[in-house]
Length: 412
Image 1 (tube, rainbow, N blue to C red):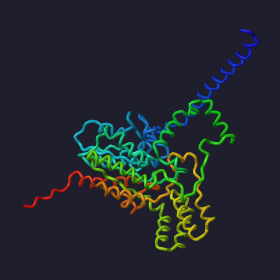
Image 2 (image 1 turned 90 degrees about the vertical axis):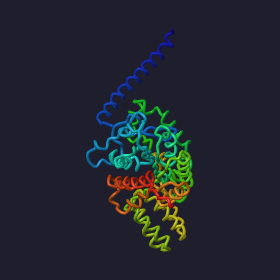
Image 3 (image 1 turned 180 degrees about the horizontal axis):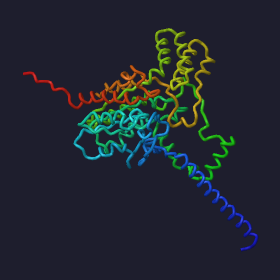
Image 4 (image 1 turned 60 degrees about the vertical axis):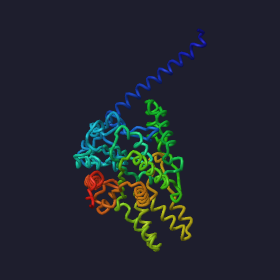
């Protein structure tokens, strides 16, 4: 080999060796940082079938959950199939009635220990039944139907309990960000082929540049939408279609279906509801005053208040203020799970009741009972342990009527 070729090759070899050394150093530093921080892996994993699902063999705390006391009580543990470990023994053969609960974070038991979520409390209340909790935080009705199809033959339930609404009503920046199998496939591929987090040198440089404010976080992008026209993860029409698919799926297999209807925390949505009540009664000034309070509270229902306030302003001719009021800024990370709700819980609960009437399903009005006492909520929508026990008791009564209907004596 000529000296002219040797020089660049030696330089390239030194450069590669230097990069490998930096990669090794980055791995050591970031691994040590992770060990010191005691961070847990995400409890979920992305999948084209369901959007995301529980991570098999996960054991730890779920990020973002409230742990008011004794964090050890809030540990989540999933088996090799992603079922709650406490439910694993019930998946096999049993002489008990098998009940499958599908739903969102209220069914999952967000903010309460696993054994305190209403499916597990119901399991404890009924000696004749095994209740398997398949709720997943963040799920919409489309994901609920997909999970029912995926797990039905594995569980072979005698009764299905379904509860969805809150996540369906969350705003997204465009129709392409609404829930669909195409969206889930796109998200799963994006996370599958994103190798940036696997290269420790890249991660180290990225963190350094962000700390020096020379690089923005990947979640810093945003989209601006109009609350009056912005779509939700699941539209009312699609919500009805998803619940209809769940009802037909159960009917075709002769499995009774129970819908659980929840409501948003009345303490968080008080001024919003008061404003809408004034609007329906033809009192626009009072409606505007209440809606402005709801907007200024800047809670989870403020965007919905913005939507109705903007519509009210538009009606009285204040077009410019209406447009300004309706403007919402959504961070890029809201593309998958959505932002705040842009539809009322009552609108979607009416759809639940209509589908139940059409297909002979039972509706348990848990929200109406919980809304009588706002202290039963942990936050904007999630019941506390007392609330979950109330929901389980209501379901237990409904199951008594469903599984053991009263006998009517034959007339001679």
